[in-house]
Image 1 (cartoon, rainbow, N blue to C red):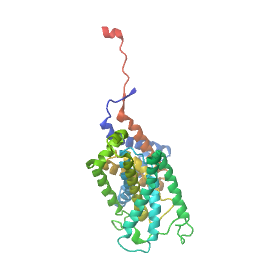
Image 2 (tube, rainbow, N blue to C red):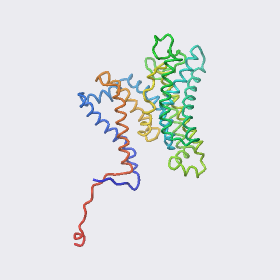
Image 3 (tube, helix red, strand yellow):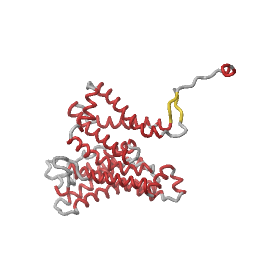
Image 4 (cartoon, one colour):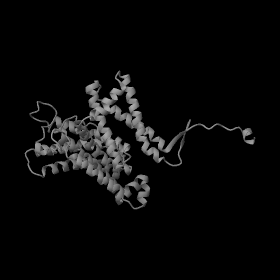
Length: 360
């Protein structure tokens, strides 16, 4: 058997690769559970089926999908133009920090304007955090992968400083967390006794927006050209620096809104463990969904399910919290491996033909 490069990329494998990666993840997960002394099929049921076996479980899936989808929406436009923003996690955390600070300041305020101001503050904070990477890239040609990753750690430590210092609840028995947010600053829930908020509608609306942008606008065409070849985009007269600023700031804004959907949604305060890795998981969502709005929605549901499954595995199987990250890591690993089949294929070695056989 040998590997050879295809003459043209396989469009079939573009869509089969995520399914193959999911299948390999399930097989590897079953083997992992067996090695841990757990029943493989029963554990997979606990991880992937049991969390959404009732209406409450489905509502909790929507809670997890909302921030994932919002982060992925911003990253999709960046990755389409091959601007590798790995900093959605930091933009999420900084958006939560500033949005949380604004929320605490508005604890005594009333009016229809309160929630829009809070959402805008989170979006602007995420945008400002992403603008740092945009400035470093356009002005100093600094690699956006490195700068956005490093900014993630800075944002997390700023959150830790804030909840241990100026934003710590003075009546919180010295726990490192802010005061609970006032009821008028929380996003309204869709149904009583469930935690799904109106943020899910914001996410779905923005999903439609990027579909229109990518398929029906000049900006979408510019992104595709820039993604194919930056030099070609420059020769075509596209302002690459302006596009970089626009894409990174939009991505940061979406991460900031995702943060508000968490802090002013199911969490209801600032806590040091606020970030569950939504920004990193959104990267998997974008590649699993093939940067297509419908694919991103489906991939968000799958990755959201890994969070619920990890929690269920902790409760029923006594497994550590890291089982969620392990499944997400396996999914990304297999996806990257299977994506090789888009440009390459495995073929059997051809037998060498003897010259005498040809003459005969």
